[in-house]
Image (cartoon, rainbow, N blue to C red; front, side, top):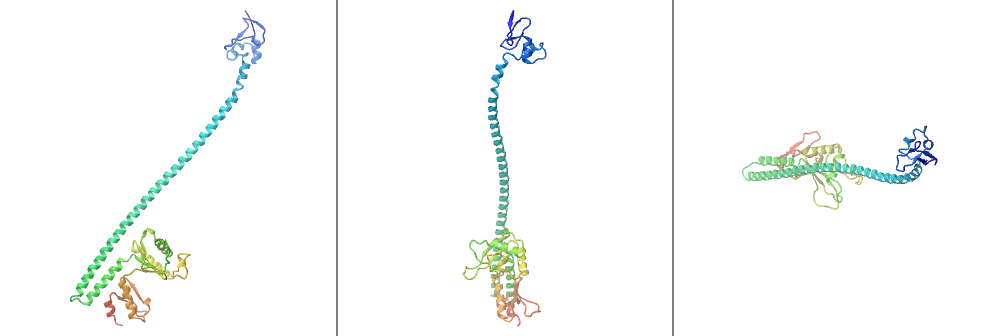
Length: 328
């Protein structure tokens, strides 16, 4: 049987032709397959066309030449989607970092809130303890005063009365060991007296925390021409003592030392808070000894001291009875 070669169109006998393994069932002359597929020998023609038909290759290649355009479009679409996914992933990572930062900040805020709550609780307990001690002390003073009145109404001597008065003055002075009075600070609206106290202590070289100031209030009625003094009650007597000692080292305190808004001619005074009875006793001494300078009469340790002469030893006066008995 003779067939026609699908490449060279020449007739070839059945013994010389080679067939493809594809569905097309084309037949070829080995020499034509060698030339079409660029083979070295004709013997490999039968093997070469089992997977690839030389007659059908041209239309198949032409059909496949259209595919890369669609594939490229599809790849571009996939790449765009992958880029969006990468951007979304970066946004998720950034959001995760922010959430972690907020979590850390929230934990720090919780910790600070807990610490502040502990400080408030401790300060509240300290204030309640101070109020209780102050109440107990004044109750004791009242009780002793009644005992003093009862003793003076009987056969007790003036010496007993003077001793009781000295003791009461000392006890009352000890209860005010944490108190100091600042005079000359201008009054302002919405003023923070605790911050003013911390600033004054800093100028004097004393480190004072705001939490160590238990109370800061203006004393007396508000007036237009005179500023009211400020009473500071601190947590411990040692801080009050440091401030008083710092004032001794820096005697000439001016308003400009604390704030640029205050006049430099404004003088600031800082003194211990003392019982009113001691102030009255000092005034009595100044009235009695008018020739003695006011700086030679001072209050300390629950009593009034007077130095009559420049180089003389100071005289300790703890009651009006002692002042009356003092020889001129």
